[in-house]
Structures are given as C-alpha cells and as structure tokens.
Length: 459
Image (cartoon, rainbow, N blue to C red; front, side):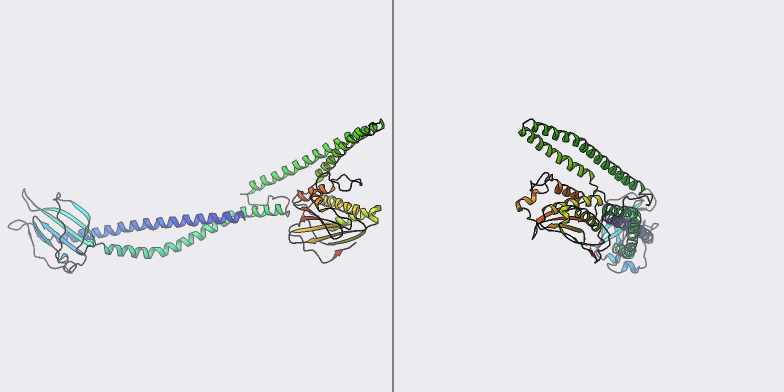
C-alpha cells in the first residue's frame, strides 16, 4: 500500500513537472516566434522604406524635391493598416491611407539613424513602425529626411494566434505521451519496492519466515538488513527467555529451602512466624512459576501456526486419565482444518490451563467448542459449575488471584493464559454462561488457511 502511495505521489510530481516544462516551452516558443515574426516584418518595412525613399529627387534645380509617384493599393486605401510618412525638411507628405492623421514630429536625429518604434495609428490601433533618418543633397547643408513606414500589429497577433493554435494540440499530445512514459518508468522502477512491500506483508501475516534473497539486486541490501534484524531479534528473544528461565529455576531451590525453614520454625513452636514465611514464599513461588511460563511463550513468531483440534484432543486425553477428568462428561465440537497463528506448545499450555480450571469447578460437564470467523477463531471452554461473581471476573487474570482458597492452585493459570493470548495478538475473554464460567480464547486465524470443513470431532 505504501509503495502504491509512493507511486501515485511520484506520478503526480512527474506529471506536474512535465506540465510546467510544457508551459515554459509554450512561453519560450511563443517569445521566439514573436521575435522571428517581428524581424520578418521589420525586414519588409525596410524594403518598403527603400521604395518610399525613391520618391525623393536629390538633384532638383532648387535642391531635393518630391517626384511624382504611382499609387500603391496598400497605401491608397484609407486606414488599410499600411502607412508611410516622409518629412523632407519642413515639407511633410503622407500616404493616402493615413487620411488626415499624421505621426508626431520629433527632434532631428543624426543621418543614418534607424529605429523600430511602436506607434498608434489613425484608429488607435498599435503599429509596428520603422523610422529612418537620412541626409539628402550635396554641399555643406544637406536636407534632413525622415521616413516612417508602419504596419498594423494585428497581422502579427493573427500570426501568433495561428502559431499557438497549431502548436498547442501537438504539445498536449506530447504531454500525454510524456506523462504515460513517466508513469511507466515509475511503475517499472518501483516494482522491486512493491515486491518488498508484499514480502513484508507476507512476513507480518506469517506466510513467510523471512523476506529472502530472490529479489532484484537493487533491493537486496534492504531485504538483507531486514532479515538480519529479524534474526537478531529472534536470537535476543531466545536469550531473554533463557535468562528468565535460568533466573526462575535458580530461585526455586532457595524458595523450597525457605519452606523447609518455615516447617522447622513451626516445629519449634512459633507458628505465626512460620505462617508469615510460608505466605511470603508462596507469593514468590507464584511469581517464579509465572516467569517460567512466560519464558516458554513462543507466540511472537509470525510463522507459528497450530490446529486446535489435535491440541484439544491431547489435553482432554490426559485429563480423562485423572480421577476428576474421568468423572466429567465432555462435550467437544471443533471443526477440522482450522489454523491459528500461535505456537502449538503455547496453545497446548493455554488450553491445558483453561480445561484444568474448568474440570476443577465443573459439577459434571465441560464443553469445548471452536467458532471460526474471517479473522479470528474463538475457542470457548465452559463448565456447569457455580460460576464467578460478576465483580470478580475482571480480577481472574491478575497474578495470584484465587477465588477457591480450598484448592491447591497457585492462582497464576488464567494470568499465564492471558499472557499467551496477548503474545499471540489475541485476547482472553471471561464471562458467566448459563451454567457456569465460560473462558474464550480469541486468537488470530492464520492467513490463507483452508476454510473449515464441515466434519467435526466430538468427544
């Protein structure tokens, strides 16, 4: 899922980058096109300026004069968008297209000056104009000649819009192709990470013990680090369990010695001190026994799985050989083919503790049933005993809690079952049923196990 999210984010970033690049390309190409069109238009104006300058006769009897010229349709039609204006000294002539409009006079510029100007035409339309300053006539006092040739910028704008209308569909198609190529590249590039994500999901669900090394070499270092981390964690858990077991075993002998000392104190005639020592020793003994049981819990392993049917069968078979178990009517209904995400030894210990507790308090019947749901499997052990006061249900899983003081238990059985369920990612639920206490061990169903078959085992 995270790889999928990363793919979408990268795809979105790539698409935005492509769109920004295409937008900048449109701006840049439009700018270059405008400059090119303007250069072409200025070159055309320069050619037209030469034809307009030809109207001047520099060698007239009285100095430079205007020649009679033939009309040009571009300049004879009023407001045609093509204009010229000539100022020879103080005499000014304009094209008929300007009608009664005149370009403003400016201060005299040096001969040979050429400028490209933006002017306003007779209809307030923007014009592209070329202004040239020349000197006409010989002698020390030549006559200044100012030539202005202009054209309507509307033609340039039309060319610009035509350019954009032609290039935008092409750029749109190019953008789609680039986005598709970027998405394909991201998909191919992230495929190894997607495979690693799938392996991690399989690892978490218990379908794989390790990620493995059959992956693309780009992600092998990552997979190797994860597997090494898992190996180190398992080794540390084993060491921690061994240390806890060693500590608990080391305490059992001194505790037994304390019980012996308490017996000697009682024989010496001080039962009050003996009772105190025995009570403290019993509390410590319960703690040691619980730590020994916790040290054996293996349910943290994601690949562990167990079938509850044979586990229950073994536990019941053992208890049936005891005097209390032989007198019990067993009602067992467990579908075959179930697979629970828990170590078989842990499940055996938890079921054993619950069934022993049920046998201890049952009048005549113990029931064991399993109900499978999509994600969970509920194993419920019930008895037909007196049940438990509602106010005491929450305290049953607390260490050292014993409601039946006459028994020989240590009050840690249900607490150990709760620890096993928690380590396996499940829960222990206690409630009073119609005839006695019902303990439900809710555990996670192993991924991709086969659906339970209709056949059941009944005892």
